[in-house]
Image (cartoon, rainbow, N blue to C red):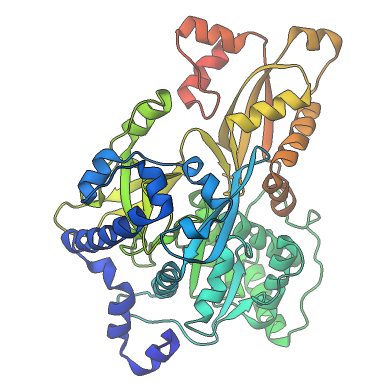
Length: 537
């Protein structure tokens, strides 16, 4: 029975219990579900060609035995089988393959297989998500057939492209733009959806946080309202481009214009739209949250999701912090001190804890075993979560996304830049860059960018004066060549993701010698950076 039919025939309490009852599980009941599903997954995975390849002749009867002996994995462990789409090697037949960026031009893409059972679980959890993001009290079902969803997710073959088609199996939403519209660039689709929303209204808003901010600034540019407090309008001009012809929208806009003038403030989207729910995804969602709440009049809800794992968790309007769905993946967590040890010493094997062992206030790198015939076991996706609440005997732990692991610079979830990618861009640029470090930082509007601290070789300095502008332009060209998502970031979000600071030659070497320690090339700490800059004086 479809979700929209259940809404008609069952009570709100029954619907809530079926879809959102997991939020009220005690930790023992939660772990019972985890262990049952993981035991099933371990059996089918171990019997598959993929499992036998990675187990290398070993066999494990229990989850504990598996965790004690089987190493943590990364995509490199699966690449030869998955990139060739060798379906006969997998635990279950995939219905669809989902794609995402791996490591720019060095390793362009990675793909993940989704089984029918994975898709069914994904769909069920998405329906739970629509309830959680719009319910203002426990047990309330505020989802209706025909609700209009402004959708800022990337289309297939990306994971977010599955969301409209999966939810269409359960309820008839109106997607803005239509899910059947696949032509045109991502930015054109987003603009089309926003125009449709202004003509007929919006009930739900789903987008990457940076895309949501772009859409909000598009409203600002159209109305001349200066909505989001960003550094520039989405159109680049800030001039009004005219309103849609819908009389209903024009009436709402005129009223909003009058009220904003009367109160001496700009027009916000919340003056025109009264949305039920707002999903804001991405690595930097927390940095956009305040401005988006101010603009739309509703707190964006955070979800946890990934290409390899589907949607794995959600918070709600009722309480901050995500609860992870018990039936999507089996979860392990690497404590912060453990993944830092492993980062400094790749031969060190970090220990993991389970959901009933996490501690409030701590950061953890998440490790996933994808259930329902998934390919990935004890898999490191590179995401770090902060545990905002945990009780050994009571309510389930809740999490917020903290960041990517320190070895990756993730800008608005559009591009993930590694030391290898930067080194290759520096080499190809032939700009005489002798040494460098790079950090993810945030501007005064709390928007993310990559800050490179660069030393120019003495020969290059003697032959030519290289300006920061030239460095930025040249390096940006090579980053775009390595990673198309980097180019999309600049075009779609109208932002420069790269900032350059030129250091006095020998600064980094002097720091390493005087401090007698290595300085991480990627995401050095603020204290390390402060100490480094002292060597310029």
